[in-house]
Length: 449
Ligand SMILES: Nc1nc2c(ncn2[C@@H]2O[C@H](COP(=O)(O)OP(=O)(O)OP(=O)(O)O)[C@@H](O)[C@H]2O)c(=O)[nH]1
Ligand SMILES: [Mg+2]
Image 1 (cartoon, rainbow, N blue to C red):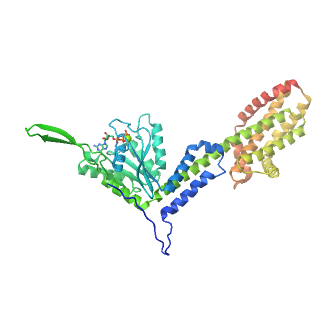
Image 2: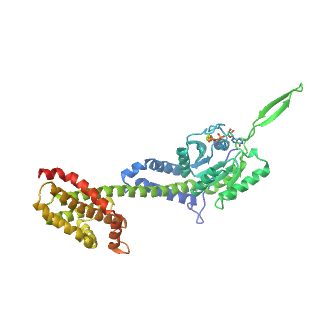
Image 3: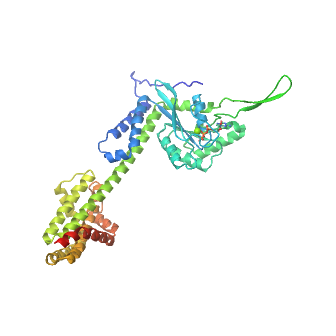
């Protein structure tokens, strides 16, 4: 049966042609994909991590331009997925086999072409393959990018099928639930199974989207008698019974036309935007953690080595301001030194009570450092430097939170943020780690001095 490709274009009341809903969808999807592709704010590292997805953006843009529609098939092994696609296409495009796991990679084949684009059929491996984690992932990746899904079962669905169906329905793509091998059931069993499938799919799936077919009915066994009265058995192949699926598919394609591809490209773009945002923030958090650690070490060592108390504090404040400026760059929010100084002053005021004790020790120890010498200096200096490290860590984390909140302290003000950061840190272990790191750096210079 040759299926016509649906075409439509609406005449606007004023005489000109208004864009059909499909075209509006397509324009929107194209715009969001192009924006993703060209966004200069996406760091190269994230582009690299998501290289496959960005390649997919290009593919989807091409598909949208041509108006191509991808129909992908899913289901357990051997339910007849490949056979169903062959029946739709009217030719043997995909391998069909009695062995479980005939189809092992997803593959595409053009079904038909027209001026409006082409329909591409996508075959996938069974969702329940042994060793099948990767294959299952593959199936769902393919599903995420297809325009229309055919979920094939061969009877009352088992648990993996019910779970997979729920996941696919959640993708919000147009879906048809297909009961294959219907030739094996008498009419009343067929009807009962269809009712059961409609119940399982729930109200989000229209009843007409649940259909029964026989993609490759078992051949009929025929007995022929020859002229001499002898019996000869032979198998007579039967035509596929897929009319119900074909007509529903046509209805959907006709009604939605090219908007199907646009709608789904739009959904894909949305998912990718979310993924990019997550990767960017993970990358920034990593970078910020490295930057903060670098400053902690610099401050710790500076405080430990510098014998002049006032210079300790000056060096410390200078480093803190540099840290804030640096973190601003990491989070894509450049700050001047003056602004950074104001942030440090705000945090300093909040920390004052707590840090007063720490700085008192700091000053005392600085004075001590000037008069003592040798390894004992290193030990005192290590403890003192560790406090510098700890203070810088607190400042770094507080500034990070402030930047992530869009340079706002939030409704409860900076005091709350500082308290939360202090509570989140295990001071004992931070100080121990800091001391070890600082002593490792200053032991040699200390011995030389
Ligand atoms: N009776 C009957 N058997 C069918 C029908 N469709 C497919 N089969 C048989 O089911 C078996 C599996 O068919 P495939 O199309 O290879 O199934 P698949 O889902 O692609 O299987 P995998 O690629 O292994 O996951 C084959 O032996 C087919 O002959 C049908 O409508 N009726
Ligand atoms: Mg197959």
